[in-house]
Image 1 (cartoon, helix red, strand yellow):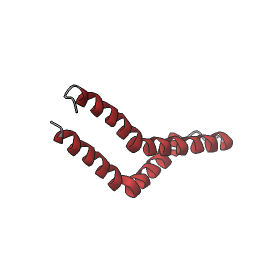
Image 2 (cartoon, rainbow, N blue to C red):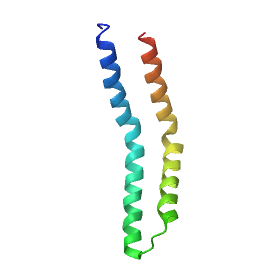
Image 3 (cartoon, rainbow, N blue to C red):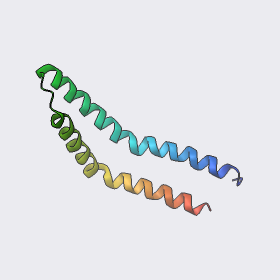
Length: 85
């Protein structure tokens, strides 16, 4: 690979990594937030803790379930990126 192309390849791979690793986190928090928001609108209960706590529980569950895979993916990317230089 041409030395000029290496930074562009790293940027492209980092954006792909952002989508792969950050996508499930973002999707989980948004979907739980929408569900809780609809529940709050239906019941007319506007408590900030009712919005915050379910999101954190869902995020914690997601990180327990997929955190190892996410960490392995990030480590593999950084080891590969460091190996190019």
